[in-house]
Length: 294
Image (cartoon, rainbow, N blue to C red):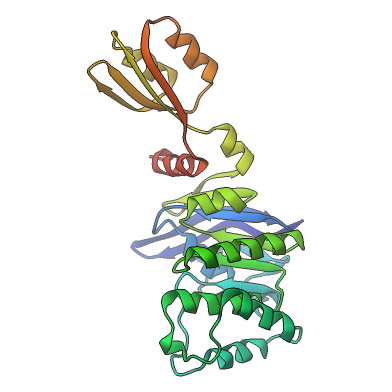
């Protein structure tokens, strides 16, 4: 069952790029990653979903409800953590959280206190006294306090120290186990690799790939360095290697094809030295959206 559905979503900003014909669906109970370079269209997509801006064309639905027409009903069951947190500076944290709770009839006061304790939220401080990281912790509590069915996170770990990042990770995995659907937009590719079931990569306003983490894992890139007397660059390029570099008798390159084809080629030459290292999946993500679509 799809919790979130986008079809041919387009947002034009005149001369500035927005998004073009973005289509994706997020299944109930999964953690769905949404990654891409700065300005690729991640935040624009999220703002359309939350009805903070209006699409030029296309369709966006959450819980099978229209994101524009039914936004009030949708927001009753959605939690959102923005990439940049802005609050009223003269409010105390406890006043802000009480205000957020007032929008939800099902807010569990005990649960809210547990969240504040988990993330070390300082209830008596004014918002103006908080650092970026402490504001982000307040935003996390605000997003979770009504136990939403869908959690939309835009760079949620930005500004958080490593301990709080781990607590957030544990909380997200616990929520997933209980059936919460999570849409995670992040620049932290290791974070996406660790938690997500599927990933969409957006570049220059267009989706260039939607795959499961296991599909990406099967295409992990290998960093190969070898020493030999012959220059076999042409043969390697024919095989489909990339980032090829030659320095005297040393050749290095990245390879994500069939490893048996590579070994078959190398076995025909006298190799003086060979190193094959598997790059992290997060590095594969990086190379993917740097090269695809160019």
